[in-house]
Image (cartoon, rainbow, N blue to C red; front, side, top):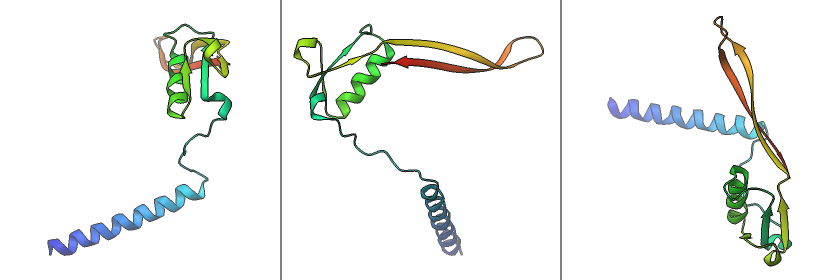
Length: 112
């Protein structure tokens, strides 16, 4: 009897997974593949941000994963990524009766 229940659950699981897969693919969702960078970005220098800036760390990691080498001097680079500005902010979405913010939206604005 237990074997029969396990088989039924497994079949149910496969049906649900199949329908979920069909629904996700029907909406246009695709997994991201490898990013192909132009050859000129083989050695990239990131300019305009402090070395500990959050955005610079994200760019460095993303470029390295994509196959680019991030260099520390502009004369060693074949391309430059200029970070013009980075600003953090927040917007209050809902306020409680007491006047305190209940929901806040965090904002990050970048220009490069």
